[in-house]
Length: 333
Ligand code: DP6
Image (cartoon, rainbow, N blue to C red; front, side, top):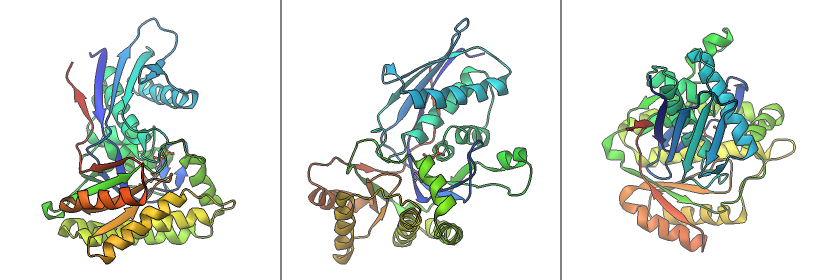
């Protein structure tokens, strides 16, 4: 049995958003979601069993992990130990290239890498479905980073037992036509930590926003349309659906009590630049997550032009170009 394992995973950006849980402990979402895994900002995590140690130790880029991240990782390891029927503690070392707290979902690549590495280190033999289900328990969006390319995460069965719901909520790969050839231009409008955590913002939105249920219903229709558009390789349709789904999600938050607003003045300048690109005939569509950063979906051949327009709109801010990336995997050694 392996005593140490290292895994690599990439972040994903949802084109149909996950926003709202039906079970916070099990990380069960209220709606299905669909994402593209990126080829930038990977997370590498090594899990080494530490016989005799009285507690887990966790580092991020060589320094002790912040308290909240430490707590979430230890809770996740408890779950893995329960499955493996072992008590041995672990040393977890994570090297993260994602700007943390910038709305780029470092938790997705982080928990996908941790799930793959911890399962291997503790000797659990899990297939991709089981790894996705496990990663979900660390952070919902991590369930999707187990897969490369495009992935759909099923909300799972409603109305059954918690065990049935848990088993039925996992991600799987989704087919996209090679004609799609997409790029995602990521404008890091503000790399600082976000003000309201996505967990708290989701909770508040579901509990208080009169727009939440209508959005959740329309999101189911968006997902069906999105699958058709991906299959056809229709980038304009993919972009239009992603943009309306994301802006709708932000509308649910703006209507929460009190409101949650992640868009900053710089975000809006990027949104305007994207509208101008479209008026000028370039296919470009926005999506935004729990932060002020803007991700612009476009054709791969247009990525440099779109990045230049975004840089003009948000001078001095980092802009990255991503393309579809690989799923989570174990690294040798
Ligand atoms: C806006 O997966 O970070 O990025 O499950 O509470 O860890 P937890 O939340 P998280 O939420 C991601 C929300 C989102 C949309 C998405 O990725 O689908």
